[in-house]
Length: 521
Ligand SMILES: [Zn+2]
Image 1: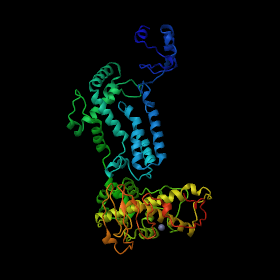
Image 2: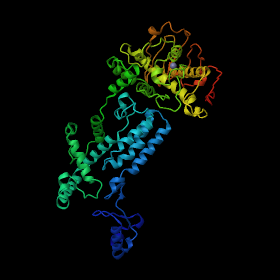
Image 3: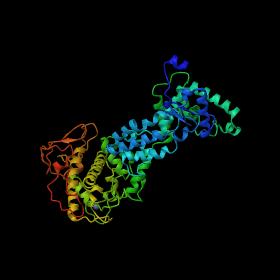
Image 4: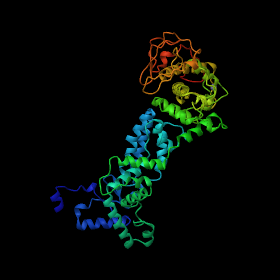
């Protein structure tokens, strides 16, 4: 009462919790505490009695360990699902994930390591926000996306370790003393097996002391050369951005970047099971990819790791055939890289020679010059974009709702004709926006953020007969704006925004078996 009067603060019993720390809480213990309060401090009789309680965001008490991470993990997963539902581009999703989802766990991770199950939840969350197909990327690649010029994705494990190490550095004097006291008390009061095994808590505590977590983080880091090289002095203020330094070093050890090996493995499987991995120039291809616009980088990467949303890759109930008319082939990336009908349409749109090999179509062939490789990669990005336009607008599950539940979906020639028209119209817009415009000089790639044109007219001369008056203007984003005076492109129309309607040829669609398929946006 005196303290209450002096501080000018009064306790609200319903928000107060008594946590017994020297014995397992059961009904008998709770009853004895209540009886004691009734006799000695009747004002506290309505205090809650629990085995763990929240203090400054941390659950403290003998049973805190089992539920410590439940609430933040639920919040983290809910936010990851919400970010995934936006279907935002990769870089935006990654940014939102770092700032809105992972940050939920960062506060508690300063003192308490996340549970082992976090890794599994994190793997699922990464697939949810990025929409990469299962097994197309490992967590190592997800955490090293910055090597492809994309927004980096933070690793929960590394972030937790780095933030705990940063806290251990800034509070070194406090926890060292607490660990000393804990060890002294453990030697006196706990069974000898506890003292020898380093356990400093009684058996009914299901989590380690916070001071011991900090001590372990410090000792583990001290085993590494990168940490000793920093020569940190706990008695002086920590250097700025020290957590970032810790994170980078921990990431390099736990999740070393192996993009080249991983991509080579995926690409050789796409080319042929017997393809020679040494003939894949993945390093040169990556160098070109990082010069491309952000969206195109991801489109090429999704192709390389076989992450197209085909009905075969995503194990959909209704397996589609090749959307371009090869009725004996499946809706599958490994076919589309070969599909003669599709690549003939691409050839006609770009007025460029057909890349003869899959390695060239994937941009990893050893022979091409850098400009030729860039053209292949940009074509690949446009192909990805146009295929998914077709799938999302005309061939998604929603379009097959009224089809009887049969895995055999019969599409007729008119359907394939319609798909090809839609694809060609959209691909033309995507190719123009990417800088693969039909100009007097032939196909011209552009690099990200510049208006650098790399003429490939020597290779493509003779394949195009556009108007000699044609001129293309390239915006910094890589979009192309009129006037582009090519055959069957409307002069003066805005084509950089990939407006497929504006470019789509008039068509009469005759579709059987696919409800709502003739309805365009
Ligand atoms: Zn085909």
